[in-house]
Length: 634
Image (tube, rainbow, N blue to C red; front, side):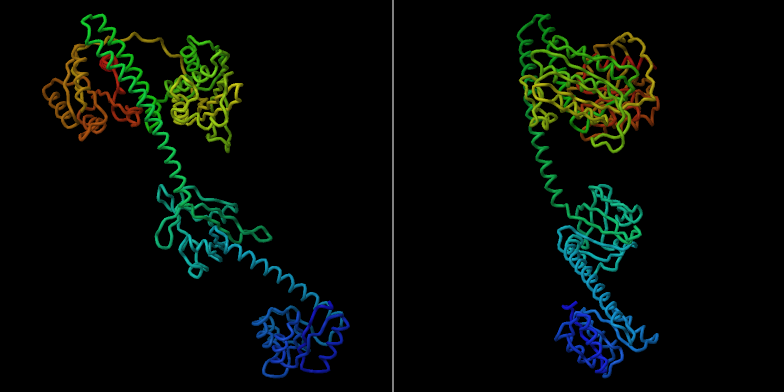
């Protein structure tokens, strides 16, 4: 208390002296005595007291209340009013100056002490709060992230410098305005407005964030990618009274991320192109060598043998193109209900032939059915098994387990909740080093002398297209485990499939219309079908096809079947041609053909009116089987 300096403002000298004595008795220091308002202001500036005892009724041009108002403008010194009486009007005026106490004369020393100590404590607490608020305000105004504070009605109460810079709006244009006035956000992909994050926080009372594709429209109409989070501001009763919104400009960061991703993609494409060129050059070289050999002999048996070799080479090349299409948006799976044990057993019977590896697979009971493209899933199992065999050059055991499992909501892996079949393929091989584990799904990455490095990359793509998940974990020199999760449908019942039907005859006498803009394909197909007894007409594009088809109907010589290429350069393609033909002849039978599998028409051909599909390259036997299947089942 001895360090507390108090200024006394009292126009009656004897009263002022009495107050001074009381203060000194209480161990306070008296900074001085002022007998008027002007003198009080002057002594306040001169002595800088810790507290002022202000008599309301003092002589001069200003009373104590007016004097306190002027002191408040130059200093934050706490003031306690002294008065011998008070009416309602005086109290009303005194309240405006926010005094720290009010004491009625005459008063006891104890009463004076109490009110002084309370005033000093209150002032000290307010000072700390103010300093804390100023510190917080300075921090918010100087941090790199944008900060906007609002009340519970989304009215802006604060915006920092970073938020001004990001939005383009100045503080004086924002404070007191609705958040939507400056914070306009849309989805990058759909361009649809996104709900105000403050509204979401107010509604839920929880911290919330924006999606990755959020665009902020700035004051000048520019677009910035932002990331943000909003948190509620709550009072002592846990009621939300406002929201603090923190956001940052991610435009440059996302641009750099996209550049890095693009570089990785270009690198992968380079590896992919190099691998394709290598493999296809080998196939082309083998084809040319065999053609040369065929030209050098007149022996029918040797020519037939050479042609068989050429067919095998083309078949191998077709497998490569089929695998490559899976990397693109194409290779969409044609899904049907299936049981994974059947696929796994088929894979084991294919891959393990001639190897020194044994496979341990115990078929479980009551396995949930899956809806998959069985051929593609077989390819996945084949690839993983082949990888396991190659990791065990001295032989060993591959263990395969299959079980039903359920993925709960919020699972940390990149997999949706629901029912799954989990396949685990465990080998005893050399394992995968930690530095290579991140590369195993990259196209053409391999650490083995044999193999192209496409297998695991293709497997990863196929599983992803089935909305599944594949994960590898390994201990070097001890082996690897590949876990494959495929969505299951427990409610499906798969009936036993009937015995295999006899293969239909290949020849026939039906009239067939072929549409293909590649003359080598159409002529080769026509020649083969002619030799099998069919009558063939060739068309190069959709308009010509429609004209020929209509004329044949008018002449009462209709076509039994139409084969339509999906993509026609500079003309009407298979999809649009089929739609027009279907209007003219609802009962038309047509096969869609293409070298691309990325179009949904191939995997959903019936939805576009087609009866079947053919993926290039195909042979005469392939097309004849399709023709007989459709024409014999009319």
